[in-house]
Structure formats: C-alpha cells, structure tokens
Image (cartoon, rainbow, N blue to C red; front, side, top):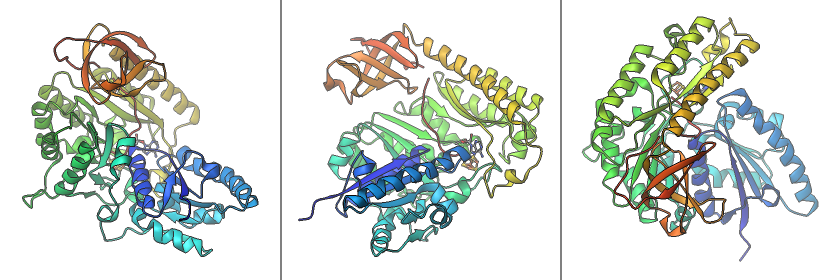
Length: 466
Ligand code: 5AD
Ligand code: SF4
C-alpha cells in the first residue's frame, strides 16, 4: 500500500471558510490524503482564500510566492507538490490567478469542492484545472460527512453551514458574486448532520450562512422553515447544549427568531447583527435596505425577548461620501446600543462592486482617524462588558486544556474565554463559574458548586457576510 499523501490547508477569512476547509479534508480523506500542519512537507497545499477586502485578497499572492520556493525545494528532493487556490479569490479571479502565479495547478470556487478529486486528477496529468462555475447540483449532497474520529478531533464546538450566498447586494460587498445566490439546506439534512455531530461529542453548534437569518430551507412538512423554527428543532437533539448563528441581516429578523430567543434556553443570548453605519444617507448609498430606525427596532425586539441579550456588529468607515456628520452618527449609534464586541474596517473598493465606481473617496488620513476613534469606543464598551462579569457566577462550556498547565478553558454565553483550574474531564460540560478576574479579554474564575448560573457578558470571532 502506498503511504498516505499529505494535505495542508490554509484558510483565510470567515467561519464558512473554516467549515469548507473541513469539508475539503473530508473529501480528500477518501482519496488517501491525511492532514499535515507543515506546508513544506505537503503533497498538496490548498489556500482557502478570502476576497472581502483588498488586504485579505492580496495575502494569497504573497503566500504563493513562498510556496513557489517550497515547491522548488520539494522538487529538488524528488517530491511533487501540487498547489490549489480555493475560496472567494478563486471564484472572483479564476484563471487570472494562474496568469499571475503559474505555480498554481488548480483553481476551485466555493461551489465546486466536491469536484476536487477530479480536478486534482486533471492536474496530475500535467495540466491546469480551473472550476469556478455555479453548478446546478447541490454541492452538499456530494460532500462526504466527516468520520467519527475527525469530528472528535475537531472538538466540542462545530460550525454547520445551513445557508450560503446572498441576494442583498450591498454596494461594497463581493459576497453575492463570490458565493452566489442565497441557497438554504433542507431541515432534514441539517438534522442528520447535527445528530452525527452530537453522537460524536459536539455540544455547541454555530449555524453559519452569509445571511443566515434569511434561512428558508425546506422543512419535513414540505414548507420553507425560518431560522427560528430550525433552531427549535436542533435544540431538541440530545447532547446539543448551545446554539448560535451567524451572520444576520437586520432586515430578516423574523418573529420566529425572536420567539426562539424567548423560548429556547440553549440559544445563546449573543447576536451578531452588522449595521455597517449609523447614517441613513450612507446606509442608502450602501444599499443596505434598512434604516437606523429599523436596526434599533430589531435590537429592541431581541431585548424584549431576552433581557440578558448582547450584541456585536460590523462597521465600515470611510464609505465613499461619508462625511464627518455621517461618521458622528455611527459613533452615536454605538453609544446608544452599547456593544459587547464589534469589528470595524476601513472601506476597501472591490472590483466589480457598484461602490468601486463611486467617486468622493474619503481621504486615507480621515479613514485612519475615524477607524481609530470607532475602535477606541468599541474597545471601551467591550472592556466594560467584560468587567461587568467580575463577581458574577456564569455558565461556561468547557472546550479544551488551556496553555497554562492545569487550566481548562471554555466560553461564556457571550464567547468570552473563561479559565479555571480543573481536571480535563469537565471538557464538554456546561458548569457555573465564579468570575474573579480579567486578563486582557479572558475571564478567570473558579468552578462554583452553586446552582445554574446566569450568563456573563462579550466576545471575539471573525464574521461572515450580512
Ligand atoms: N470594505 C470594507 N469592509 C467590508 N466588509 C465587506 N465588504 C467590505 C469592503 N468592501 C465588511 C462588512 C461585513 C464584514 C464581513 O466585512 O463590515 O459585514
Ligand atoms: Fe450580503 Fe452581507 Fe455582503 Fe450585504 S454585506 S451583500 S448582506 S453578505
């Protein structure tokens, strides 16, 4: 038997790329590949790329420069290294990637990962293989599910794609072009996947989609189910202790989602709801399809359903035409809401999007200055949110041993890392922890013998879409 071939995947960007990378590993496991953390010794390197902002997009080319050297070194040692580019840069740039970086053998868009074995076979004949179509078939029907040991190795918290693509066409955003039109997976298929995950130790699920609350997958009754109903169904699967979902759009906050927050204790009271700007003029230019008032109304409805709910958001500063007044309105909105966490970005023109044609670019120095002011405000809110946990007893789902010997790390309802001294058998359990300290973004505490706790407060994580 020939030795297994080694596969190295490097993912950039959002949670969906993390999920997709796992699906590629599962697909290629069937072709005799095993994963390696070391790109230099790999027989196949896949760069799973992100196109959302220019900085993210350019990373792929510097990495390809490094891989060219690694490949030459491998060749000197009589070893063949193949290089594939997957993800949203692959989708957006197609054969242009090979023109710019001839070292690349395979270019594969996010809708075609189930064709990887075929594409690699073509490349093995010495050719280049490019696939960036949006095939009519459902890729999920062809992507193999992970084996039990792969699920266990990935830990107790798992992402599950329930929806992909976006029909919103915000003027700054490449997602509708790279991920295509909105598609929802059927409820039964998701339930099947989640049962397998739960049977293999998964306790926490994050349902992901670029516009996850636009979910409308076919239910077992033949009708489209909204996200709230899907969450209710998944909460009933034995073993699932926590549910989350990301990323939501303010326009698609349906009553069923609000009801799920009211009625499903496993649904965590932490919602990522990007607003992008606090100015109605800029929201209109962004084609966000909602106003500041609509956003505040959505926030109110969540808060009425669950008092302990907290929010995170995404912001873009320096969108074309953004004035100092528009930016002040963004700061005012942040002040009004009080976020547990938020991500903010300088506007980056993306080829092919309507905003890239807009003149009235904001000067780079103004963008830098606005970003710094916004980030200071967000940081102070996040710190206050984290400090508020000190002295409280909060539920923590324990995930893994921490770097410090003897410590186990888990997360609160608000995704704050929490460290305690304990034995590793608490991994996978939700236990009350008395928080007595804070180190940067991490909470420190002790296992409390007490009755079930209320959740504490804040977060960190990359987001997708919406
Ligand atoms: N420039 C800057 N930020 C962007 N985002 C999306 N497109 C752009 C762009 N062209 C941000 C949005 C989105 C997050 C995932 O990335 O805030 O919510
Ligand atoms: Fe869709 Fe979100 Fe991009 Fe807008 S920002 S086009 S809602 S993915």
